[in-house]
Image 1: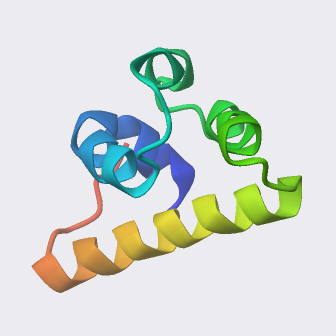
Image 2 (image 1 turned 180 degrees about the vertical axis):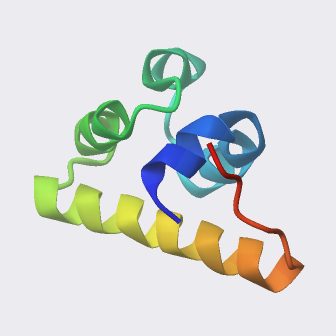
Length: 79
């Protein structure tokens, strides 16, 4: 799954992301609004992560979201 699918389906993905990165505040999530770069920046700030580690965690989140979609049998949305 690419980030465009995450962003396009942010309402559903948001609860999963919020659970995963529980130290992010409501204000952080308001600022992020489904934007990958903003998520990486907020992860770096709140968790003290290097850029590479924050990017790795976000990529892992995207990959896991893709796996869950495939396991559920959901078909990709065509834009």
